[in-house]
Amino acid sequence: MKLHLLRIFTVVAQHMSFSRAAEALYISQPAVSQAVRELEHQLGLTLFERGAGRLNLTEAGALLAERGRAILAIERTAEEDLRVLKGLQRGVLRVGSSTTIATYLLPPIIATYLRDHPNIDLHLTIQNTYTILNLLLDYQVDMALVEGPVADERIRCEPWQPDELVIIAAPDHPLVLQAAGQCVPADRLADEPFLVREPGSGTREVGDTALAAKGIRLKHTVELGSTEAVKEAVAAGLGLAIVSKATIADQLALNKLTILPCMDLEIRRTFTRVRLIGRTPSPAARAFDQVLDQTRTA
Image (cartoon, rainbow, N blue to C red; front, side, top):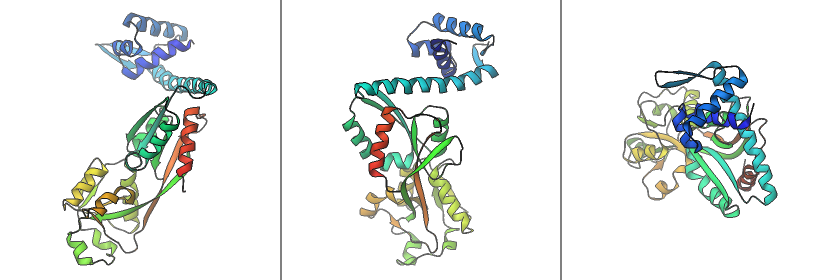
């Protein structure tokens, strides 16, 4: 199997379109079509079902697309290893990160990395933990930082930073005023409206697990797609929320939010560095690991 044919096929499989693949590869559409036909002839298998103006992967095509992405990822790593002989004069690093880490912890780390390695192109993908792990498994990112433990035997996990989650409220929330600085019994939370992140969010999962462990079932929830939206809604008096303490320093200083101490409810987790088992880190990734290690406290 010729590598350039595999590369063209994986781009077609990604876009599910010969024309869009041709645009992405800067070659003609007939050249793309010919390459796919040649690959199918070499393999003796049909890779795409063609009809009604649409493409669909066959079973063989889906398998080759998955394996092809892995093969091309190895090729990129090999290229990176060769570039290191030139002192990392060029390179690409694709980092995935869950929202909380990317927004509140990574900016100074990325600034340090790019200051030391200005010729590296760093692409940061920000999604919830569930989505980031799927991108890692699909070879769409080289490494990732996510919230909490990961139960997947294909992924190697390394603790990076500890994190504390707290319950937040508006300073004039009735429960805050009633508590008057004292701890609130955990069972008082069940009847309060809660602002929560979307399913797949690491913060949502850890918060739900902690409440369930105390037998607390929330009766009223409003689902929002970002931590910033959650904080703004809480500040507006719409309810309570569970967020990382690292995300609220500014709001606490401005007295827009306050932490609501809750009796017997301590929520801690670990931010985790993850990569695929068996996948050798590129030189650019190893350099990023060094910067992460300088900030590691777990």
